[in-house]
Image 1 (cartoon, rainbow, N blue to C red):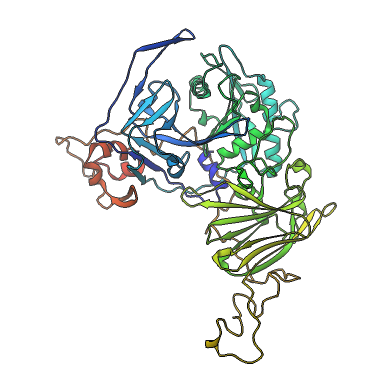
Image 2 (image 1 turned 180 degrees about the horizontal axis):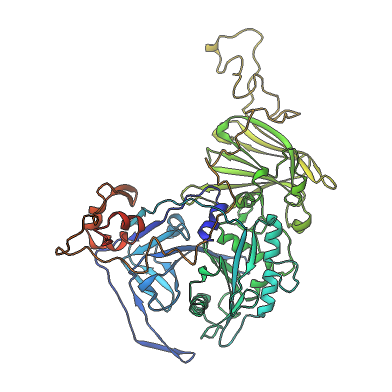
Length: 624
């Protein structure tokens, strides 16, 4: 099952389309220095530099540190083909672009990136962009692909245990296997907690390949760990494992966890690439379930869970902070993340500001008591504010069972918000807004962009054992109006009519933002089950996960140039004269065709590497 497909079901609605980003330059250049510069571990390091020749897979990550700081929105590229320069695997960090450029333009694990004016430094693992980030072309030309789920809900995980010349990962292979898969009796681990939280809808099994121990594969690197940057260790571990297995790691595992020995610079914890198969951990953090669940959550395109101005501040679930413990905390995810994961779709209730005013009241059941949700009772309510593009998620955070150690908002009704990124089809960081006890309420003013209107969430009571339910009343109401005068008034003398219209709200409004006793449903009589986005996938996750990375839309080697004049094409070897695709130049979008691609050899190099162009511009791309 491809990671890009696993990512899809946490995004709600997803149509995949590859994006190409390249930076223009008049003349490409290559630089390759082969001058010895230093001696390290009996090996001569050399300056190895060149310009990129093929599109790479763009990735983003946030690297966390033990002091609570992080390096945000780091931008990477997985090199392809000739740019690997003979190595099996190479991930480089993109540098030289304006601040925020990658965050605004890169869709992790889907964007293909190319630049003519570049400098790949193989020693520092950097891709330096030497031209302005403003001179950018985007192209969405790959055919859209619909996403489907696997039938068995099982995902494979390969764990790489690093061994350097001076340091090894502290935990043994057997200890790593036990802490991740519970192979030797560990009762709380990555596998057990995801399985419990999802009710067996997400099961992580150890890869059983020759040379592995309970899903763990020992990789030796020819470097001293102490003082060597983690990205060098990571690249060599993945490259050697790929060489030893004889295939891309994505061909044998849905997810790969790289455990780095202690001693690399900085007190970093872990990081993962969004929508990609790889996560990386600093030594003992590879054994802590909260870090494991958090980073694989990023692999599945989950963003952080924050509170106020702290992007990790929501401690009700695993996408906030991680904890230096092998035994806890036992908890799952907040309402926003659980909604994205799609584990309880039949227990979702959805409303939209576009559907008009409404009132709703029912009991809500915590995630740990799904069996108690009877008579249409819900577990998550999502209310979409179409004006602000913010969704609000309400759930009962019952502190019990596999959620018995939730660190915040236990046994309360929680309200969180998250903005939907329409360009990337993912939710951004969620924000915990309210933790409601019995008798408490939370109001969002001017909801739906209606001045004076409000969305109010009220919790009349919370019942713990044995019922384990919370009563929740939600009302989206209009602003209060003035009382009509005793004598009739001409409509022209009043700013509003003497009687309110019968739709979309009742003929008389209550004196409170919500009625004292809220009917089950006031308006509309039938609430649409899906309001926003316009369509949600019917199943929670896809059928198959990418092998390491898709070989298309970019082949390992770029297509050849335009055929010479002496070449006589066959009748079937023709460009499709009707074929057009969209190219975005800076802020404008333009339709281009095969003749445009053929007009410049650089366009042929880049665009003929795309499957859709190659299949339609047959003659131009020499694909006869």
